[in-house]
Length: 416
Image (cartoon, rainbow, N blue to C red; front, side, top):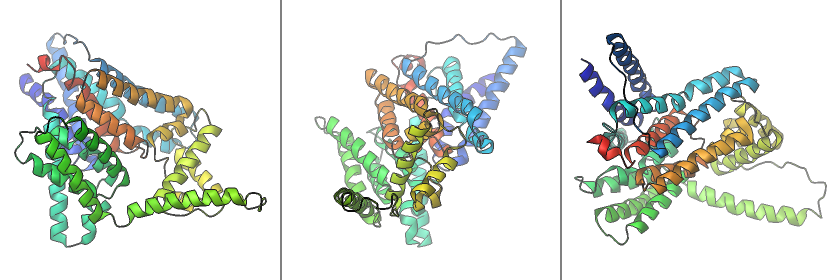
């Protein structure tokens, strides 16, 4: 009985990884089962008088990443002390509970099972992503609805940016000898392109381009597969753009021109209104959110509290005439600014240490999966509040912990 439960526990990280990319909330049940089975197994062992495990040395990268995750959650708990919207604060702690739970579960897994079961996580994640892409494309074909072929229609229950974040890992999740490796990467590239997420395009282009350069000297299956993914992403982006990239470039060019005009007109119109109507659009809205977040950060160096971020930002949006951000009740759209607004400069500094410290250890120990994942988080986190939704929190923490453990120098020994 106990041996069978131990086998189940060894597979739980892979089960969570498989489920979390099929539907955002589908990670809740396996995480709950994982936790309850751990409690039940350890209580049974204690009643039977079985000795506990012998602690195993923890990889440095995991210690850093897990400690950072737990510290972020502890800081959010502390933020309840100076928040006014307590309902929103407690809800935020509930949504972000995985920041605490997953590192503890992975710590238990390492001490009880070592690296056993961890090598199955990349395969489970890849299988879940392939199933998701197949499901969404089949649904688009059957329905005949053109909207299901791009952006939110294609991403379904996920935000397109988050699905693009997961798919960036695909070239490293699969072995080069995997049957259909090239075809899977071509489909992945097309899918990322059709998601029409500017953040996903930029990050995938940067990371896949970097992988291509690194493998330029060894033109094996991975080199050609990654190259095919890049080309197919461009093709998919062209088909699914729908004006999103032109909206971004037009916004940037318009902002440059308006800045130059405002400087030239300062001497002519010294009494011009302080706040002019702000253009609408996703790019403009994100800039509105960033500007408001920076203003709040400077005005509240210790933060506004765990539950008051959106309320305070909406006040600034209203004052500045940022109608798009106000109508959407936009959060800071940046992981760094999100914690900065809620917990001040200390929160932003903690995020900086957590992710960049993990990247340094991943580079030091030559852990490509962890380095790619943490780099994707740093880039995506600059333009998206990754730690606000379950579809961002669970993958961030689970994959960070798994890659830090399975890529450590002693992991292969533990697996054997």
